[in-house]
Image (cartoon, rainbow, N blue to C red; front, side):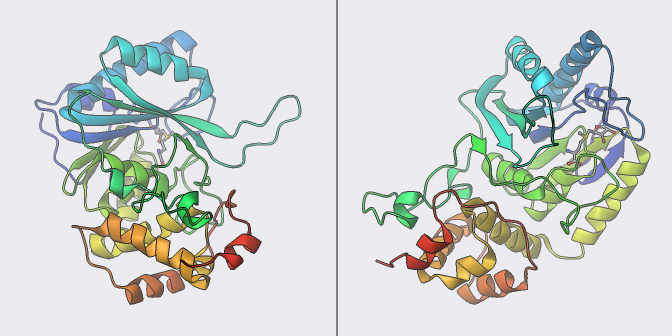
Length: 331
Ligand SMILES: C[S@@+](CC[C@H](N)C(=O)[O-])C[C@H]1O[C@@H](n2cnc3c(N)ncnc32)[C@H](O)[C@@H]1O
């Protein structure tokens, strides 16, 4: 069977991916049900642990069949089965490059134990010596640049670390919230993964597409997408979500998403970015690096887009208090 890019396919990902003739994906992002009793329309999310682990191996193998030799494979998973995913990955010959913790900033409140507020995201590759990793697409201004005016700072900013704590869950008030899926991932989290681990025109595959976040981010980044979900309803609604985005050319979407992602990664609201000459300087330098060779963007365009955003959630910036940011001195 041949899979064509830019489609959302309804069906069982194991059956579909096991049946393909050639590897098709440059990047796979998989966010399977966690076996914790979430309410999906079709999938029953509470099965015997052994069955869940066997099934995990089956879909990971099917994904490996679909992944090109230089491809990257990210898997989001909860605490209960993170260790199993790592063991299976070792067995099937994947190389782990990062074990990322996504700290999504607030969890469900508990009484008898600490509130859970994170998800594991594994970053694997098929070939440890041959893969795409665009560091300039994900670097962020460092504290050396922003706070300490340190001349030793790298002008290209710093690599984010493997604890991701600036991306909030998609709350009810967020514009991107679809409302018809129980566990939608944020577009900017997918944007970071797609920016780092794929190139323009690459194929990004999501075997558990859900509300279609991966396809939505891939489209906005000028990548091709393939989403698979067993729910006809989720697939239908995802196609509608993509049709909305496709009203704008990917370049327009890309600029907006990238400008928003950098605000959130730096922990500043658009107003804060524009209020300080120094913050804006580093913000724009970082954007220039990210856009280099992809798109031209002027200062006016950046400020127009920043001004056009309604309020969006930025996580507290740990290193720079409001007080400090207003006192930053431009060298
Ligand atoms: C955790 S959700 C994915 C959410 C997605 N990352 C998002 O941002 O919307 C898991 C999805 O896997 C789907 N699913 C479960 N088993 C499947 C299978 N065997 N093949 C394809 N989809 C499946 C469910 O219907 C559900 O929508």
